[in-house]
Image (cartoon, rainbow over all chains, first blue to last red; front, side, top):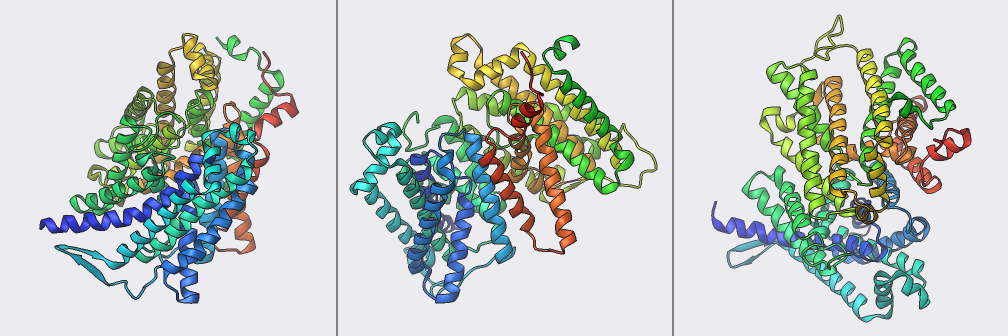
Length: 290
Length: 333
């Protein structure tokens, strides 16, 4: 195969990786603040993808515009979930939280299965078959748009955490739970906001992914695993780490698929995960000792 | 030895256990083919739940990748039988060896490099997924197209080659589950059992008291993996077909740990109670769906999920501990 093929595949993997990265960013934000591992993350992702599918069918709007209302809906979903169900579990042991989210994931997957059926569904946009050429590298236009939107959403989230008072308050909760309560922060409310923000990331990522991939209910657990792999590679709780992890995993999977067989591609992602866990358990950009 | 094992166990508990065992032993005489398969499933989940509980309930190490050991055990014994005609009773030695080795490797890497908590759980998922994809491309056992054991109509049970009727498998599973129960009870009463509990409650404190934390965590993983692989051997010879996509799948790992968590983590009876409740619930719902004529895939699982959710929210320590208190079946001393 000519060398350009590898460059093309790597470029396309990196672009998809940014969308994965945004999804993983949601997981990372939730874990970083609430300290709960969202085992229903991928199922929330497919929920957002189905929302995109339905809205696209009804309104005929571009998914990259739809991502705003979908992120808003997912935000509300996440807020209510944390406020109603997960907050009482904050101080329970890990396996207890895990069970709660597994039960939730089970319900989400199967409700989607009942409503939408088991078949893969996708959407076609006006630019589905367009592509850009840069030198010898050719990439799909839809991937470029999706990756661009992922960067914009991620940048907005970074700015929120860095510059707004609310963002600072949430970071205070993450740094010191008791301290945050002492200074009078409503931690439960902030946790719910954080889960909402994480879910909004998933919502936006789901809308973008719909442009480049199909959705089935059964793919939810695979996205959950993908988000784990990305976040741990980049550093659980680190926001830039999630994006970096997304890029790395996106490129690894894409290249693994070409160099070996496509069905073995996620093996490389897991191999990378194992290596990172062993040699840098806090992740590439993570802080030591959580 | 036996006296030490019985020490502190309330008499009422022993009577209940004996009654339960007797009931399970005569069950095939009354149960038809379907009920018998449900009984087998309950015992199967009680067994693997017990095995998983050694790692999580006793030593406090959350594994979400136990399907790895089931799959390795199943494939090892099945491959030896199909390719070389080796009896599963000899093949299970290979199953135990492979699974114990895998457990030892994962344990060694994790505990030496300080991978703990959530990270450990995800590491175990990663290894199981790795095996799933690896076996998809493992030609010797037919990869993703599935590995099949030869099936025929058996006029009599061949216990040596594990070819025979569901009744034989039921009794085999009953003996294994009872054995696992006694073994776990003995382990919990041993010196090592107390070390495990110390490690579960506080690894730092255990270390400070001179407990070799690394060694005992390793032992827990290896015992748990080896026991789980035995369930895999039975699985292979009972169902006669193995698909990496199914046996190594993460949903299998989760299915296997729901029982002990619902029943009560770290208790001996918990995995048993959990297996009864969950399998009973799942099969009961299937039956109800059939009766009501509802044929929508997913409805059963949604209901299942809601039940799980309710148990986790309202019974944080599982179903068994409050039951044990109510009936005075707690261990004394």
